[in-house]
View 1 (cartoon, rainbow, N blue to C red):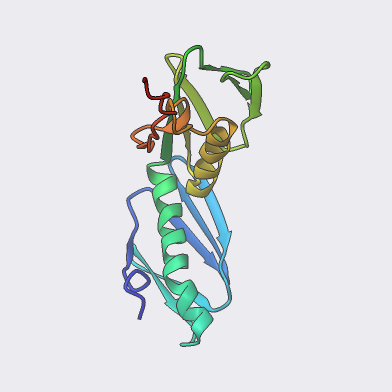
View 2 (tube, helix red, strand yellow):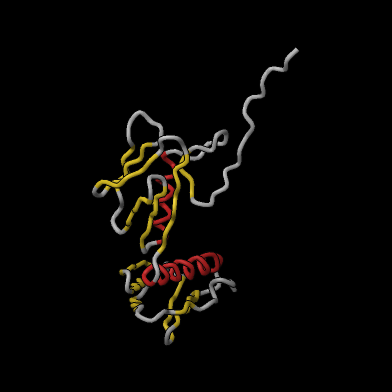
Length: 181
């Protein structure tokens, strides 16, 4: 039995769940999410909890059990509290701004890089060098933050680039100079 899969999911107040076959919809104060689950997984609502179970004990069903439970739990968390990823720009002259539905990054290239927001994602810029990506879909928030980070990942020599707040960048020593005679 999957340790993660067998844990029940507590439903906060103001969160409604609708289960129609393999389609699950979660509605809360921040919005609504829906997802289609594989046919090997079943979801049951009992009072203010959700239970995720597998239809049989086949290997694929066991593999999907914990995953589907976590996906449903993330949906419940997203519509009740939301998710947020913070990125920081490190480097001289690196800055970010928002313009309409786009994030504009000046990160050392000869041109500004424009990244459009996907629907359901809010991006805010604090100061000039902290980007806050927030939304109700954890997967979409993480993917958007990863796309922003991929524009200029942190480099190991000076540490310049876009990194997650709190991310440790492993630094390398530069070239060692020629020994004096």
